[in-house]
Length: 282
Image (cartoon, rainbow, N blue to C red; front, top):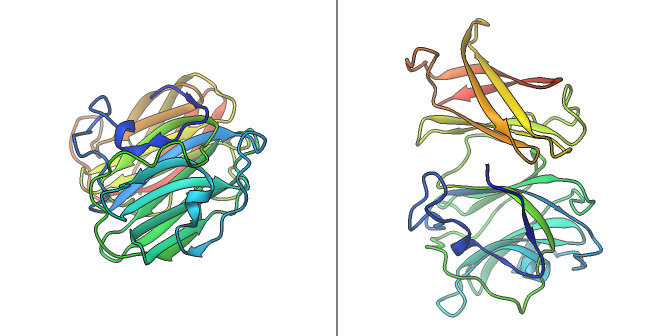
């Protein structure tokens, strides 16, 4: 799990944020030319991020927020996308050309000094966009069609930037198959503000399990996988650092045999915390 990073008065440049030190990364790790999903956790305050509310809908309005992620092609052409915060709420925007752009807006106040999970996604075939906050889908819209292309350096310091902490930054070359699991309002068995969720990656035939806690805890996390009959098939372990744990399940049982696609249950145990969710193995 990467360490928590503190950003102050600087834009996170998407093109340089990912390098070969990340598992599965390559020279084209961040490429808007296809489907993509981007996720991170953030913590900040309104006092340090005073950009006003961002207008939602048509237009490149997200650039007027405190910019957190920036994939601007600058002088090369008009194609770009990014994530910012306006009045403490997320804004995700995409531009394909000067006359074709859209901004999605979140509903949750995320600049309250607590950790929040944010995920955005784009489908290349029709430009459809999604924005999740803390595991809940808060906005979706049919955005600009077309290829965004590989991401070059971003727009720089002339735009307001995010001042706060980020952690758990992840990028997928593809779409998650469903909304994050564990996204109900009443997250029973977990501390307030915590999340346990599963994402399927059909391209790699993997399921990625995330656990996040609001208290920056460290320790060991164990996840047991049960099939539809309730039979335990495998136990997975991971390390909690900075309140986060990521465990990758390759779809095999304890003997290494590939299990059939379908619905399974995953149970997280971390200290005195226990939580079960349903997941689909691709």
